[in-house]
Length: 189
Image (cartoon, rainbow, N blue to C red; front, side, top):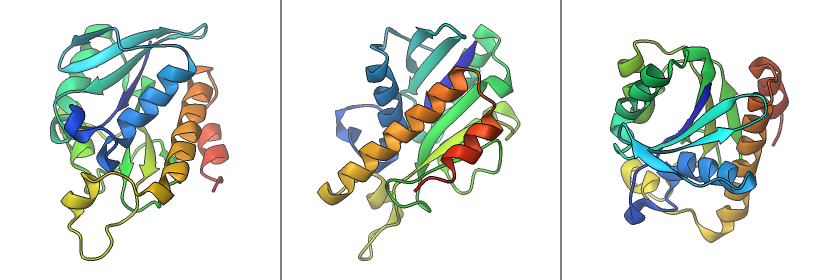
């Protein structure tokens, strides 16, 4: 079994915000495959995608970003999912909207959702897809920036990045090697 977790904040107040790009990618993947969230368990909305290659859990935590690990760890424990079988999708300030970057492991890089996951798992060796949200402009604080929606002129790039991230996830679920997937998608725009 594989697990894909998109990070974000629950509730209508946060729909469409930069911090919720992980949720947006999960929604893109679900729409592509005709899936809907089926239930709630362990502090997350989830569904099981019965792909021909593997069962895949898709998660959207409702713990809020800073406690994302509290939703991930119980699913991994309950379903016996190994570290190498998870991918975390989240926002990245250092990438402009429209860009994605895949990594096999690494530090939290200042991202509180990733800090929570590393703390709960006791390791940082898990796959990630970082989706660009850009840096704050005009003296905005980071917290105001990540909780703001994308500007209209950024929306096409954001949708393109969500589609690219969903493409990379499809490749991974299909059984392609993550390093090869990284080499393909990290070269794109």
